[in-house]
Image 1 (cartoon, rainbow, N blue to C red):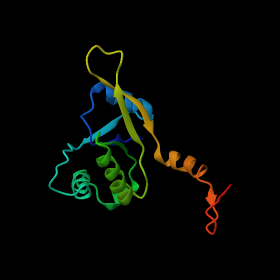
Image 2: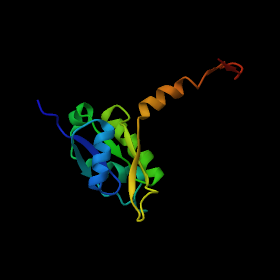
Image 3: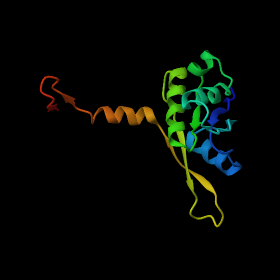
Image 4: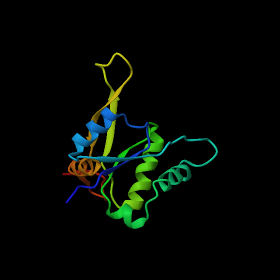
Length: 143
């Protein structure tokens, strides 16, 4: 049985061949399917409306969002990335892993390499252990 390519919902710059290889290796897959959505945030519409339209361009129905494995390369603009994850979580029911690229310091020309695959569900679970609780009557921290 052959493995289907893992979709990468790319809301950043198109991936180079070297980046595609780095991503596939980091994710433990033999092949990725890049779905590139060019994001240009404008001042004439709300962030949520713009992001919803970009996510619509992926072309998946509700079942696909809830059943397909995928990874995200978010836009570089932080407010757009935050809105994107809220939109995707609403459609899929979970926070997907995402890619973090950094400038390659070993390159004489500007190139970016995969720095890390970030797993927000793992971050969320770890954060839960640090939140503690508070006595609602006094506001004092209870550990």
